[in-house]
Image (cartoon, one colour):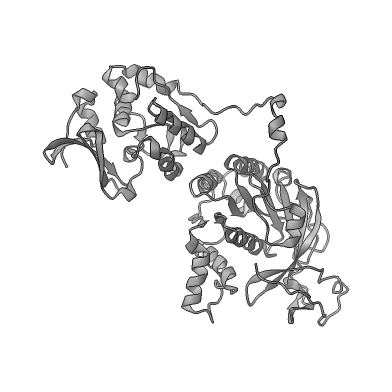
Length: 503
């Protein structure tokens, strides 16, 4: 609608109007200015119409609206400037000769944080993000809200000289060079984090509620005292022991406690992950067999898990580059509100890298993940593999786990707040009786705390029994293996007096 035209009173040239698709037209008997928002296919998805007296109105599909001008620039680069309004974005672009990326917020200062969070993944592809919002109070308050969305040091704030409120004011005054200078002189405004200890008494004297959430297994809960935001928790075991099943139960429990959870299961597709979570809700391994599950029960399991909108799954399409994964973790935390994130597993992340130095890559990955957990204030559950222990007995035969067996690098043990080892003898077909049912011992997993930065407690933390019919892990309050280590065959009378209830 309308044709590109200059806007002399605003200092906007015809070249700028053509570059940005900015048009002038008549609507309802008055002259209007039109800002076209385009989608990823370069199609006009919505239009922001500026009537006289600064009356704005959106037309079209506002659901597809991102940042104004996104379609003009390639993904990623050295720097991008973000302004508070469309006219300011065109003004900055014109001052830079339309050579460098600039976009604007479609809803002004009030909706700035929400809009930037929605487009965070795209913005994080740039090395530097410069906020050039209006110099008035609403604009500067929006700056304070928005720069926390970005990696420390990446976001800078441009300051315009008084009495100019925005970039267009400066363009009208002919201060083109000064606009560019403001971009180059933009500064990181976050504090450096250095605190004088003498000023910390009030902080130290305040009781902190450190526990963010509980764990589903009593043994782990007792020794770990729950889990806290900012922690990196590594779960490790031999091949096929059931690491994914354990973290899936933990994720389901956290979700049931009202948390939003991110699932980055790199060895399976999102359908398998989704069915695994639904299977816990339905007490049925739905990824294997749906026999006996009615459509109503299947939908109920979906509604209790994926349907809540508080599970976010990573469809990795085979891409496991560490930088890509870190950006996804940051998006899950900042953009989706996930406080707990599962990454399964570290080895597949490292194997996807071109660099052949496994130890160095693991060091870098662990450092980045721990820093990310603290930066985004999230708890990360990371699955890691073990190297084969010395001797004839491997982890698949129930060998005890140890920190020294973590595969690839000591950084896994050093940077993890907790390391939880899982042990299970896959070959032991001796039986135990639990809740009236007979189980083989190869369905019993020992939980062992190998590192505990919070309380220092380490050692055995309980036993989990896997039920093939329900696909669930149930905690046992006593050691079911104590009388079976002698190698006797046949069943035992082991029984939980109070039973065990799926959580």
